[in-house]
Length: 214
Image (tube, rainbow, N blue to C red; front, side):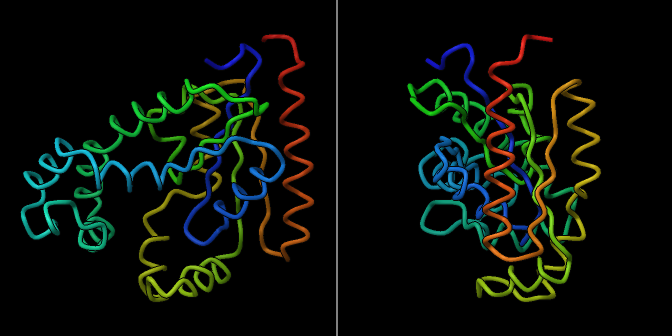
């Protein structure tokens, strides 16, 4: 069980912004990082009930060896907002349950970071004491996403077009978690600059545990 003064931070950022890099830096600084992308991968691979629900909703063409095929699903949902909403309705509850289980595990870390592109929109937002939003230029985001070799620049632009902006994420978080702080982390320079910014934000975030309750 987490101590009462344990801080839970949401980490978000759109495709190619660099949230995973920020998560790695935070881990090196001492954070416990819960990677929601990995949580989803684990659920898709190991949750037969979820797999059956996805098959029923999207058909056998999205299945591979009895499990949901992430590439096939991506090809559908990133071109159809209604399909994306249906998929999220199936996945979000299980991600929320698994995240709660991970949060309940003992840790000596002073803070836990929940890394997710939709951490504000998802079921874990009510657990958050603060939010980090990673930003970059659209050009750099496309370049980084395409550099992975998994998607083309055109596909990266299509996915980015359906993602909420950093401003939208901040507004929604302030609405859902009034009074909780938000840090914006610019990742349009080099790695050293990013490391320095994350180190500063980390120290400022840790100070939350010493502040009196609001």
